[in-house]
Image (cartoon, rainbow, N blue to C red; front, side, top):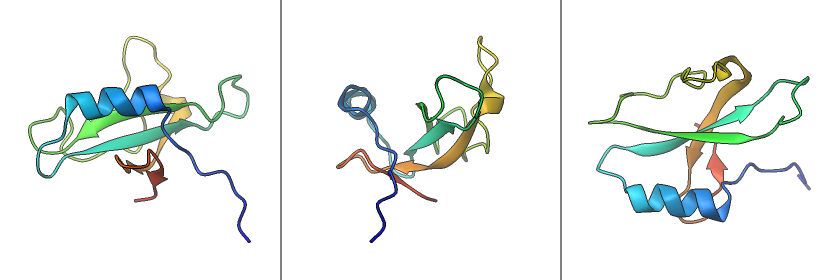
Length: 89
């Protein structure tokens, strides 16, 4: 039996994503902190990608913002908007 932890969006994050909605061809993509030296290892961030979004396709690493931590966050899949689980893509 596989008992590995499956990444999942917190209910608050899922509610915000649902509130912002999705157009055909769009999806919420999940990025996970993979930095072994970080106290926030495992933390998730989300980016909406697809037509009419900043990113047509999901970047491999989290886009850099005002806080330059994108190198720590790697793309791990898309969010199932029903369950909040991250589905590998």
